[in-house]
Image 1 (cartoon, rainbow, N blue to C red):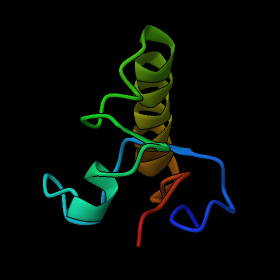
Image 2: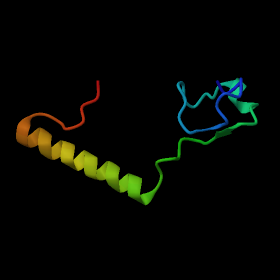
Image 3: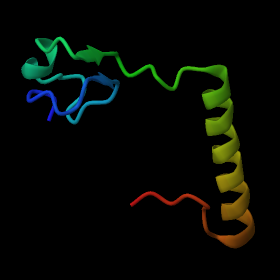
Image 4: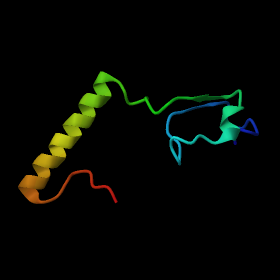
Length: 70
């Protein structure tokens, strides 16, 4: 889709086999690559901490987390 121009552009922060980035993406003018830092805001980090604490509280109270990961 990116190579055909069907999607105007993409900003990518996460890659399937990090830290390896597909070479094809490195040469595309409509792609911006970032080193996995999109979540590095105070608000996001606070939300991540809150989620962790809520999961711990739920686990110790009910034996289940709120946001399980397969």
